[in-house]
Structures are given as C-alpha cells and as structure tokens.
Image (cartoon, rainbow, N blue to C red; front, side, top):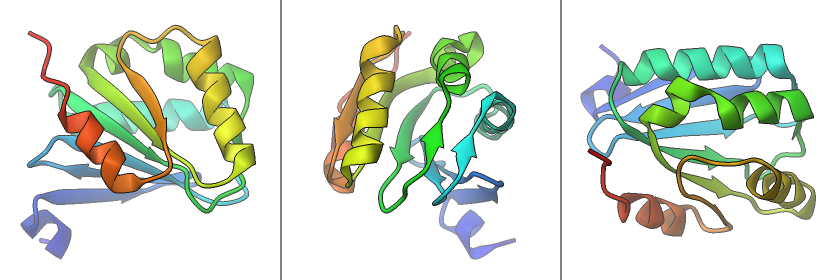
Length: 139
C-alpha cells in the first residue's frame, strides 16, 4: 500500500493532469500539467476516472491550475461543465490560478457555462480549500 493510501489519499496520473482524492475531506484535486491542450477526448478520460475514484460519493473539486500555461478547448469545457453524473456528485468547485492566461480561461469557464454547483476562482490554495469545506453536502 502506498504512503498516500496510508494518509487517506490516493493519486492517479494521466497525460494532462494528476488526480488525487483526500478521502477524509472528500476533496478531489485535479492538478493540470504545463503545456497541455485539453480536448474533449482528454477531459472525458479525466471525468470518467474522477467518477470512478470517488465511487459514487459526493466530493469537493479543487482544480489546481497554478504554474501552468495550458488550455482547454471549448468542447472540453462544455463537456466538463455539463456532465450530468459529475455535477450530481460535485458539491462545489474551486479553481486556483496564479497567472493571467489561466485566470482568463478559468473566468471563461465560470461565466459562459451554467453550473449546477458553486464555482469560485482563487489565487490561494488554502483559501480555496476553506471555501470548499464551507459548503455542506446536498441531501
């Protein structure tokens, strides 16, 4: 068993991102990799694997997009924003950025797509986690 499992965490690595689940706080963290163009095929893999990892449990989503210059095309953003099962399980989404190009992409995702759950953009990872945990589980 890996040390991450012993700490209540599990981590999975993919072409465009690493996904980890903090089983104690139910925070699913997606850490995107630098210089990757995420298309609908890639986001489908990330969404499907995220759903498998949470195993039907409600979760908070923390998107860590710091220190990268990557992008997600329109069809991938739409797929992610509108995925029925993913949104049913997701309680709230915090997106953490620290550069203007990534912030603009996050703002486009926030403003141009309807979200079934709260979404907020942050520059501080700890503040993002605090905000997520302020949202209670929907019944």
